[in-house]
Length: 442
Image 1: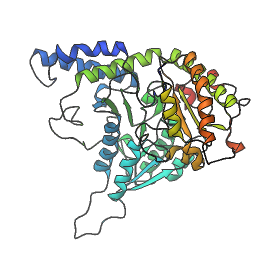
Image 2 (image 1 turned 30 degrees about the vertical axis):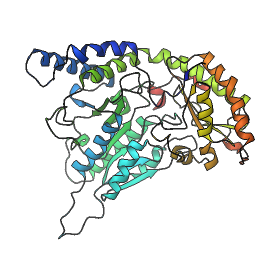
Image 3 (image 1 turned 135 degrees about the vertical axis):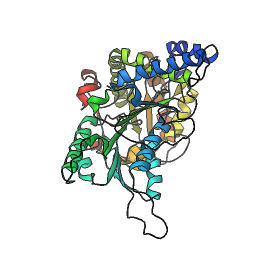
């Protein structure tokens, strides 16, 4: 039986070139980079080299790169780090608690690694504004502008959505935040020499975007950016946080003061070498791989919409990741479809891998205005380096029959909302004509 992995948004396999780069540091060069003797110094050199590689791609200084135990930890460090350093301190029992310790802004379609920390902060007395998105999953920069307040500490909007693949206008949002900060500085009545050291700051979760989009933090205009290894054919359990030098954070983990006092604990040298190598390979091969995946993605979307009735494409037609295909198949349960496809050797998901084992509705599909029935039937196919056209053809050999079988036993009969349907005739493969990433997505 064929084995076709189409869940690269959940995680990727390790690139053999990454594995080769990591091998040296498992057994031979096993030193602690904090040690002064030769084996420790060699580990420190490897750490510094990896940091330099990442910094060059991000277009930042090496000391602005913090390695963590994954994307989730990096996001938590950024959010809680800002809250602890810039938020109003909790008053003692003899004084009234302030109305708000500070204000945060995020979108309703963020990964749970962002949403759950925000919910935790609300319980501590912070206020959070959750921005709506349009039917394609796009955040309106003007909505960010309206939500900004003098006590706003952080705005967090993901670079590209992990479920529907929509790419957000990060550079436009950053410009709005920068202008707001400048106006805030003018209105303070005192001269602020370094406005970039004052909130509100802007963070983007770039875990899904790192393999496909331009990661230049100067062009994006962000103060904080997160990515991880497992989405770019690197090792799992390793992430990185770009923190602009002028932004102050309170660490989550205390101890030996590693990672510029931001993340204590002996550094995972094999993992850090691996994420740097994976990031480097991704940068070198991005343009060609984006073009290949976009063509494959559009071919698959056209066949799905043409050959299976009552299928709706979720996310933006053009402003989407080159490997992402998210659909709602009406009158079926997504979980059942996954199990049937699994029996045929095809591996996909219903949305975020972090919640795919629960029966909760996708908060992303609901946020873009789809009915609950659409969310129940949502499926995510995400293509990767080893995906070829024959894989798409094989899916289309078995998937229509699975849908027909599931519909035959389904008690639900939904009517397709015409305004939400992307017909094959209207899907002209525009994505293949648009450069993915960089300036085009400001």
